[in-house]
Image (cartoon, rainbow, N blue to C red; front, side):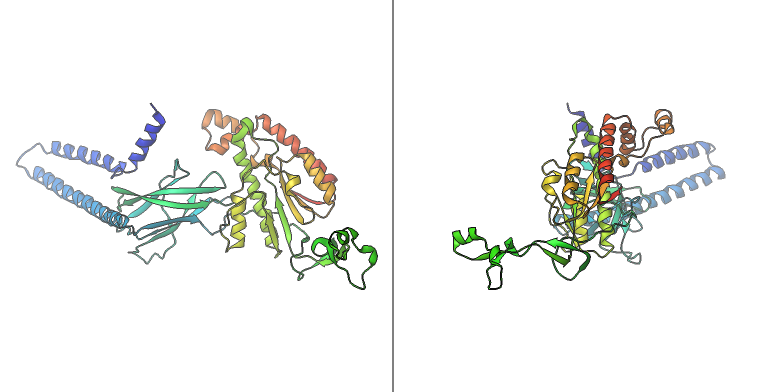
Length: 456
């Protein structure tokens, strides 16, 4: 018997209980108060007993009216919602909130639900079923609509969702709750949803990055340092009368009977774009330490995004070169598109740094602690000083653990969340020594190079 499956089914069925738990507690208190008052009126045919009986009658009528109003105001919008759902008129849209986040803020998810009517002075809450097996806690939206719209037929707002990873999530359905003003009753209904949203790296003020463009896509931007570039298409052109006969390519003439000359390398004072490379290559593998790598990935994505954003604020034309395929989402918003590509990237083992990096175009290269130090040395031997290297130290993904942290974990409280547990385990893991040693090798190589280096 699969107890986990039974447990999940019972938990899911509990979402549709039409009343809140505190109404049960209230009912118990009212019953105890009723029997206690009845017990105190033991003297029949007296004014005291008549007053107690009248008080009980008025109290019961008032409480019944409150329950009736709560029940009606919650069930009518719920029935209206079920009718529209059966008619296929209701849609829900879940997407990434456009607002930028700081490094300490929770992720924001935007939700639009229409048509729907809120219970009078009541609440609408939701749960989202995402990534096939996960269900969010019940939450209310931070309403984007004007508070003057008392009887609005739509629900639009954002939810600050403390999701653990920076990646894309797939939403398959939603559970919508209609609750009265006193939160006695909670009528639930499901609604299919086929939306994706991604959590975004936070914004963090970093050091200014000074970089020169190397790739010419137009000749509108003049650079300070003249660079060497190759000639025209295929470095050849047809022979003309004023060309040097010594530059004729006789092999082509022997094959095609065409006189062409080789165009030499020239000095070009123009360059328009900064090509931004960020490698997600993992040369170490995950092995038995796979729990640490999502936290590494979150930290690396935040470093890459903030470096890209620092350049973008300088009004530099940037072209981000991914090392893995990605969807063309947000094609109409270039900055949001780059954020999506960075947020949905994963550690990969197919394309190493040598296969990915192109020294003729690259102006910025982001690398992590999972890159082989030997590959970094080979890149620097090829590029010289015409490159800005941003080294993201993954060991900084976990803050330092003090003795008091261990004492609190052992004697005072358990770990607050999964990241706290990983932070404690990281400090006693052999992986820490392995990554730290590789980081020291990379930093030693970078310190000897002529390239501009930024360590984060």
